[in-house]
Length: 360
View 1 (tube, rainbow, N blue to C red):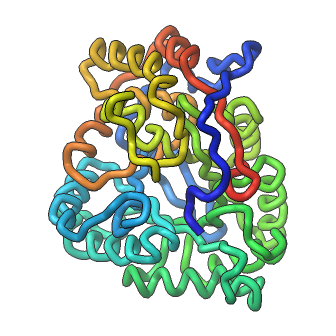
View 2: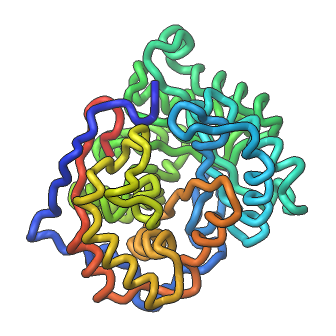
């Protein structure tokens, strides 16, 4: 099943007029920096991560991202720059490229990390939760462990730093999933565990089930950007803060829509379905972003990422070439003003959930 499965509306819905996005801003003395900022809590050990993760979805994925193996040298150079910059957090999944992304990631870590050792990297992947998969049906408890072992074999790694449930559509009960995740932790194959695309209710249910095994729920990863502020309006950011759960955001640049790369005359590929609104609807926001980027001497991508970070999220930024890394790390060392945040919020959208996949 594709990670973009489900019904995605092409008509953006506005944020309720009564909603105040400034309430989620981190304290005024916080400025995004390339250093360990958050802790993914584990049972036996925890993982300190910087406030930006590199997304590996496009690596080896031809269906959505039109990957070609000729891109490998560019990716290798991008990876060296990414980790040598101090951004050492990598996000992957068993579904990405049907496992090919994990293979590529393992090769990058072994041969193209610029001397950064594995112990200084933070690597997370996600369990393939598709209901029709035989192991998920026949082995409701052990499936997460079995799939994790396959991920380790593909990537030729000894352990992952964090292992996420990719979505809420697994056929198993949350209690059985939690029991399976506990086995992954207790066998030393992952330090921390989390979820992705879970609603507030299901996230807290998973936290309670994991607690029975002495394991914290480290994180929840959901789509969050200026184009999809649902985690603000539905209470996800508040619930994560209250319960000590780190919030990660994917599609934090709207699958490229917030980088300045696309316009109404040059729309993104139809496969880029997250926040897939007509570019005409987005262009008023892009004009504001362009002015803010110019004022700070940074890229529009950096504006989108800085917005995420100062609202308490760890954005996941997909990269496959050096220029993207250079643009993205410009999100550090400065901070949007409250007035700039408001000007962005005023042009943003609430976004929607999909019942099939994306509930958070």
